[in-house]
Length: 228
Image (cartoon, rainbow, N blue to C red):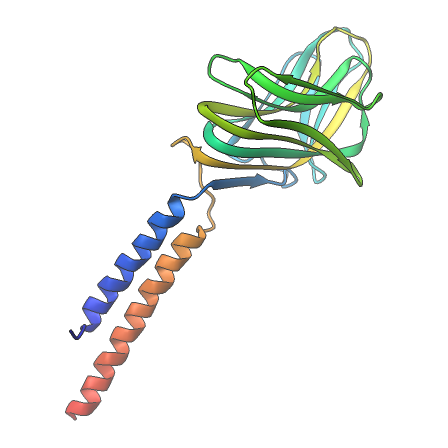
């Protein structure tokens, strides 16, 4: 069967859509370096009295003044995720965390039950609360900083949370900088805002479409030459 230029174009578009649907079945990846100076629309910041957050070229800086107030600063996702997932964030050295300061990474469900991994930078202690039975919660020191990671499987809708916490009302100042937040998960909630850069599957669809247009134009030109 011979395909006209129009049919080739339609075939290319359908093939591209098939590639796109295959791509959508794969895990979704979200990455933000936290160094752009503007907040990603998928994220929001909340702070309580005495706590602050600033977006800088080094990352997002959380701080707590030397007052006696207890509370926290949080960078949270506006979306939820589920299925198999790996979540990580990198914190920069030096961090100023006293014994009354905690900083780390957390996931929690809609009932606000959570699992988290955090540390006290001054002592090097790493603590894990695993109330959601997540597979792995780790902190891995590295050059210039360390990586908090939470990974596993969940059939619940979870929210990510990067935090600085002062739980005991101590008087010490605390500061920590985070960057390079990444999340790979099977499913994101519909309110997740996709980036301006097309996904690989979208590029494949576009390229197949362009190929169909080009081939159709070539066929018409060739047929016109033969007719002459």
